[in-house]
Amino acid sequence: MNDLPTDEMKTVENTQPALEESRLIANDELLVLRDVQRSYIQADNELPILVGANLSVKAGEMVALVAPSGAGKSTLLHVAGLLERPNGGEVYIAGKPQSGAVDRARTVTRRDEIGFVYQFHHLLAEFSALENVVLPQLISGANKSEAESRALELLKYMRVDHRAAHRPAELSGGEQQRVAIARAMANGPRVLLADEPTGNLDPTTSDYVFKALNSLVKQSGISALVATHNLFLAERMDRQITLVDGKVVEI
Ligand SMILES: Nc1ncnc2c1ncn2[C@@H]1O[C@H](COP(=O)(O)OP(=O)(O)OP(=O)(O)O)[C@@H](O)[C@H]1O
Image (cartoon, rainbow, N blue to C red; front, side, top):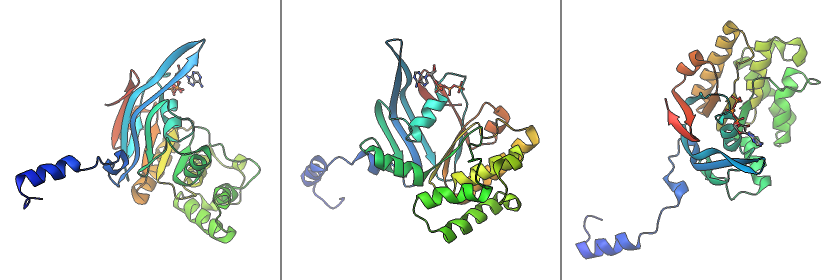
């Protein structure tokens, strides 16, 4: 480019096609929200919740989402997790824009690229801890023995493998949540979304589960967004964000 005479340079610049928005996203930004809008209709009125929300979470980064009740934390997680479509803007998962994707493609992305952890574990009561981590893999097409060995590896990582054969009701709250984290990781997601993942646990157990979650994010290099009211936990994450008038603001 530097060797080109000035007018040729101008021509090149003028004819340069605009880069697609998705090409501007760095490879390590696994979760990106650009100018996301989301509103609900309540009693015939439009209630804006997300009003041009922007967010980028890098590989291996854990971001705390701390905001008052009703500010839109769940809405943000649902939109990021492809559970709800935004009214405008774009969600990128591992660099891929999702707004144009049909529902089936969004379901596959949600299943294979996004892990969810909720306040209450939502494990399947009739299945053992191991089976709970095996099932999502079978649904994604893995064979049984591969799925079992990965499930066991994840349960080992979460230090709950000794409870693999037990059903959720036979596990403590902390064990249930560690199994739920293993399940969220079952299909090797690129993005982890968590809603009060330790909200139901006592402080010691909460600390233990948080440490396990944190080292999983760091070692696997996924991008994690964690909604929490626990300011002590939030401070231990890489960044803290909140929602102000529907926009994401760094704290
Ligand atoms: N499906 C819906 N239809 C209509 N309004 C909704 C819907 N979902 C959420 N809202 C409204 O949007 C606002 C934000 O809700 P959201 O659940 O995202 O808040 P939150 O920050 O997660 O709150 P909390 O901490 O209490 O869970 C609330 O006023 C809620 O009533």
